[in-house]
Length: 485
Image 1 (tube, rainbow, N blue to C red):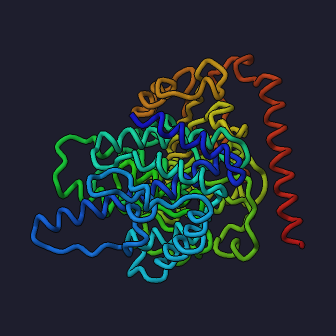
Image 2: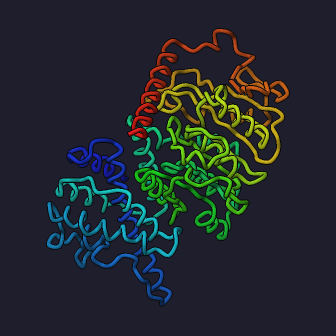
């Protein structure tokens, strides 16, 4: 029903000189979608209040509400062309009045869990990039046709929005950091088995894919009570995100999946000293794909007992510290973490093995992530007991993955089934920690059941990884140069 509308929105944005990529299309449509959603939410709340004989105080002043500036209507509900603003006047209103007004809610909100605070965070972190007021008017008119009232409408919108995020992940630049393949996320959830009433966390939530998929998983449980549904809405899902674009997309993604006021905070997760994390700050379940390849400044590294500039390794320390005793986690990380010989990597592997039960390692094939060629693994662990045995599974879909042939749920079905009982097979095996070298703590993926041929990568795979690693090296060197400057 709404697919053509989403296509029309992107087609319009492609014509604007201020928008140049899928990332821009997603960002600009997201803030407009948010304001359209907020207006419908407020109208519904006002109607409910009236039926109960109560009054409702709108969050936004009348002149800044969607039906006033974006889509004014006549008394019979048709577009009021006499009151519609377009062209330069529309751009001037949005840039100089609307955005500053909305950004100010960051200061005025009573606490960070309110939709007012989320709105202030969104409009503090982004700007309107649409330069042509007539193109902006077309986009607004398309968005005004969307409806958020019925669950079926939200369901369709959420799928279309997920497609938009997926396109960002395939768009190059840094798009891959916003999208983790949903079949992989669903497999991680199946292994972790989150329950209603548990607190679920992603400290590098990006587009909130882990939180949205876990909500869908729990929402599908049979016989949920009204109390259960309220718990899922307000006291279950928690996220942190540093970047403004990912933040607004994550908020909008959760809203479209059915979470009215997502508990996502815009902050640098790594800026907090992990020695200050107390039991009340910890979570039952952590699911995450932290960014890798980045380098953190010295002052950030001081927040962690194991000093390293590698962003993903700092996040892993944060997650180990943030999961409750008895809690579970599934974390995506580069496969080189298993074998790196630097002191930080060795110390972190030792920490993981001695403070957690690292029971499963899923080895993912090349091109699992369309925006990144680096191979990854998923670490599954429980907090509180030392690791005794590790079960490995080497995922092999039997084909080369790519944009037109991505990972699917069927590819992971055997992994999910065998993992339940840690069954050994041609693709899976178990090692005892007494066989691990206590100097290197090397956890490399070495399938004892693989034939010599099956254990070798193709020349093309090797060349692709070399090219990806070269790009990462250049990124790191550029970052070092920036710090020196």
